[in-house]
Image (cartoon, helix red, strand yellow):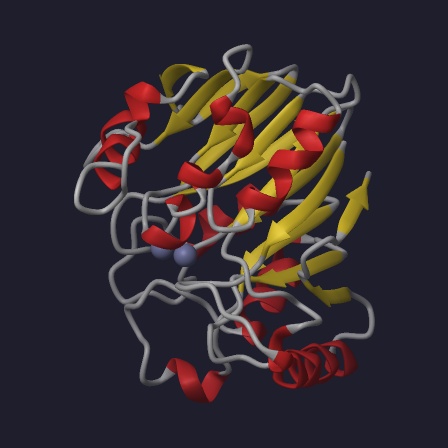
Length: 273
Ligand SMILES: [Zn+2]
Ligand SMILES: [Zn+2]
């Protein structure tokens, strides 16, 4: 499996000299299985930069999975180049309890939010499917867990040839009202080769954001430890977190957890397992 990060920012895109190392685009991950099939997770503003790569490499058979429909996970979709090619076939998975992907993407492209073109006008062919707890997608086993986050949100585990990548964003491990208990997350991440997890807060800043749906750096590394995960990648960086701030957090956590590889997601980060 191959994974590349196209957006690692939470809530709203940011720009400026304080954000050049980790990037300012909101959530988008790109995964390829060993046969080169493409799976995209979320359509934050980062998906705009993924478009030219897919077009250049003539990858028009695409799978897009939405973890949930908050703005920072859908706002890049109208600017995703392959959606404007008529030979693109996009199979789109997402939660269905409160809304569904077709309804959400249509709505964000209605007037007065978006000019000229609607979802129906886009030349690509879209096939909408429900995201289930355990299914095969493009020869990968894809497991989905309910995250602790306002509105239905799914965490994902991708498994191929005995290797696993977990992506848990957005997720509040210590949420006062839980969809999923901590022990279930421990089981979900168990022995994953890589765990990418929302880490928006420090222990201090979390105190004023309890119930907002995000975790702290320390909670995430503890989950890795409890689940036997050796490599942790913090993501969904708070929109106020500068490069310097994120560097400091990674160093602080890495220093106190020398047996676990600790990193922060940045645009362009590539992982092969
Ligand atoms: Zn988010
Ligand atoms: Zn969210």
